[in-house]
Amino acid sequence: MTQALCYQHMSAFYGTSQILHGIDFEVYPGEVVCLLGLNGMGKTTTLRATMGLVDRIEGTIALNGVPLAGPAYRRSQMGVTLVPEDRKVFANLTVEENLRVAIRKPTKGAGVGIEDTIRIFPRLGERLEQKGGTLSGGEQQMLVVARAMLANPHYMMLDEPTEGLAPSYIDAIRDSIVAVKALGVGVILVEQSLPLAQSVGDRFHVIENGQIVRSFTRDEVVADPQCLVDMLTVD
Amino acid sequence: MTDAVVLQSKNLAGERAPSRRPYLLAMIILAVLGATLPFWVTNSPFLLILASHAVVAAIVALSLDLLTGNTGLLSFGHAAWYGFGAYAAGLLSKNFSSEILVILPLTVMAASLTALAIGAILVRQIGKTFAILTLALSQIFYALVFVFSDRTGGEDGLQGVPIITAFGQTVASPEAWYWLLYGVLVASLAGALYLRTTPLGRAWLAIKENTERARFIGINTGALKLIAYVFSAGLASLAGALFVLFNGAVSPDVLHWFESGKILMYVVLGGVGTIVGPIFGAAAFTLTEHYVSSVTDAWLIYFGGLFVLIIIVAPGGLFGIAGSLYARLAAGRETRS
Picture 1 (tube, chains in turn cyan, yellow):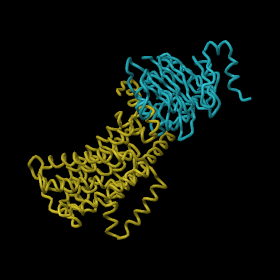
Picture 2 (cartoon, rainbow over the protein chains, first blue to last red; picture 1 turned 45 degrees about the vertical axis):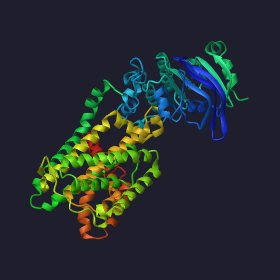
Picture 3 (cartoon, one colour; picture 1 turned 60 degrees about the vertical axis):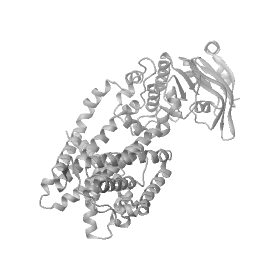
């Protein structure tokens, strides 16, 4: 049994329209895989398919050898969690309640506790009593990332976590990715901001029209930072 | 879901306590006033009866807020479970036993099991569909009373419920009844407030806020909604059972959609999701209904107007008004000092 989140020739459909055309890649524990590409190419659909939120898939998505199936909450309990792009916090719950509601004990070890998330996001610690809906956009993003961490997933998917955020918040999000990676959590990062992706990514897949068209390792990107830029520039 | 976290002691005790103290004090004063009510109204026995009805209304309002306030599921047919409890307890007392400690558990169990079966279908629906189905359910229960009218008394209602016993002692005096009802209300309220602080209570609120996001963090939203539905139905049936045993009779009106509408009004009037508010909503509604309806037949018009006003001006209900008044007072005091 491979310890990995494996996409094997996975195609995804909304109704009759096929969005993904046979995606193949793996995410290993403690690794950050970046999905890159222009808008509308299927990055978000890949994440949604993982949570069972598309109408139908072909091929398989397997978590440590077990095909992911069932409703979203089951998949979350199996160990994958998604932080969607629209960063919805539970607006009428306090920050502390938002965090507490997400806590799930990991299968092994102590896992992430509220104190750990506050160490990474001290801002949240200052606002524990405040309603989630009154936080700024950046703080809300911190809160949803912290919430996802507290579920102690094996694999965490982040959909454009830094979109529209100020640089200081982007640094905090980067720190959180580094922290979960250090815990052995595999991360799939869909990101438009190349600097962030380059600074944390271990492997990079460029998606175009529902297929992976190029893949790079960290070494390749470090050796030639321009290679990703070339792939992602509209010309 | 254990959450041994050090933060709690610091923040709950240190920062929140000062602002909550007046609230708790007010609650304790009100609770004591409620408990000692029989001593205040010795000259007008009718007031005690009216207060007892208000307490029953408060329990059923609380039961609806367990569902609507916690999970956001809106029921237009909550009288179904109130009436279920009333008829089940009435029939049990006439045909089986007049011991309240037998009747109440059996009634609540029967209602909970029925609610479990029906709720399993209902909670899959959301929003309007759920609301309409609950309305349909209450109408089915209403119709059943007439289908089995040889048992239920049909239009005439279920009459001749015997005087009940508790531990073999008859419970007949209005004071004893009031304290029994009041005790159930306080216990239910304590239970409902406690649930709020548990992982289950927090998960309910997460579902109410955003069901999809709750699923993403691994909450089995369907199962937890069903639990809320069953708790809510169980408590409503308890209120119905207490009502029929106290009142000695029950008419099919308790299953009518108008009754469901009233229960919903208690909750909206008091403040949806505040747990405490609906109790005051129910009490205020019951008392006002009595006095206004003795003055004018058109009392519903005034209530309709009040309802519209509450929705527009104070969507948080009485509880919300009290809360914002207090916040304003506290702010005023702070700026002066």
